[in-house]
Picture (cartoon, rainbow over the protein chains, first blue to last red):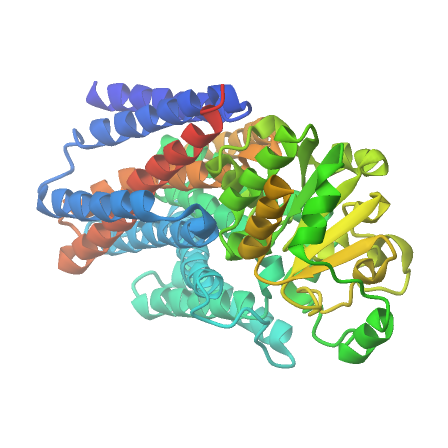
Length: 467
Length: 94
């Protein structure tokens, strides 16, 4: 009877997760959706505690208090600019949890009745092996992604020739260990070998990926953490794990696909392509820029904005880096007080994770209606007086549209160059993550404001208000 | 074996439902979607609790379960709280 009740409660929890994600389809219903999802989680955990296979609660209580405490501190303290790192490390924790419980489940079955003979036991062992492989590579891959985003490690690709082949060998080795384990379940060495090889694979998969491709990697690891949970559900014969794990897996996969489409690259190209390692170079940049750069002071930009009717702000990772979102909002307020209209153009891969810019601007209390997606904003640059590019580079590079020989040719970009005047706020003429010069900077209608993003925006605002 | 087929069916159907649902989430909410799904992947807590409370596998298995409980709890509590914090910022202007 208890069993039936538990499974019904798990079903209810799964429904709450689904309704929770459905709530996220509109900003107005999103908070409620998140609450529904949390309620589902509470329900699932509460009924699990009633399970009579639990003989002692000491480690459960200690673990929940410790983990819950760490989670609460992380959630309260994290800055919105650091969300990509937080999501990266949470992906790793999710993978780690599935890895830990699958490993425990293996040891428990070995210590208890052992694995069933025949197909059933083989399937269970293969499932356990797959869970620990995905879990293990999610842990180490996420740690590298976190270290790169937190700038503990350099953001550039790190690798060696033949790395893809090496990764292939690791994967084959991990899978072969799984097969050996299925043949001889008592030989725990194969079990730990599969975990170890997958852990190295996680490192070598993410190390060669550069900073600008991090949105794809985070989304992909997000998916892995879900798939690992779903597989753990197979291991434990637990339906709520299977359903919620697949929901998370699907979510990560879709975000991965959206990010790849936004960069006009295939997933294998992002994972193994190592783009930017040998393109352009400084010389090409000098040639494009020479004698054609017009730089302007914040005061001049302030004067320009006084008469602007329509202004589009294009934020990029540089805005996050200089924590300029509040300053940007104040500039927009000043322009609006002057009678101008302000919109924000959001490229899908701006920043370090899907939706990063939206969260930062929401933090600065910019209404989400003013954040316009690429497809809808691009036609609007034609009647835009001033486009302000703040810390974005590759996503505004006209070469993606015009230069068939360019490595980024075909990548959808924001057509800022169509605006009457383009203001680019940037520290220097250095290349973006693609390592390419940006002809946008050399256009006749482009004004460069060199300096720290936040300071430049504040100075422009002051100039506009005192003008 | 029938149970496995049932489980695989559930997995595939849930994946398809997930795809349908998530394509409807607007790009504005993609970051909260990711942290929210981080929280949901903390559902591993359910399995972790069973692993940490079971004595069959000896002490190592229980401590592995303990680690899983800690990690999954971080995801559940941290994921839901930070998602709520972000979503509240989106809601503020209504």
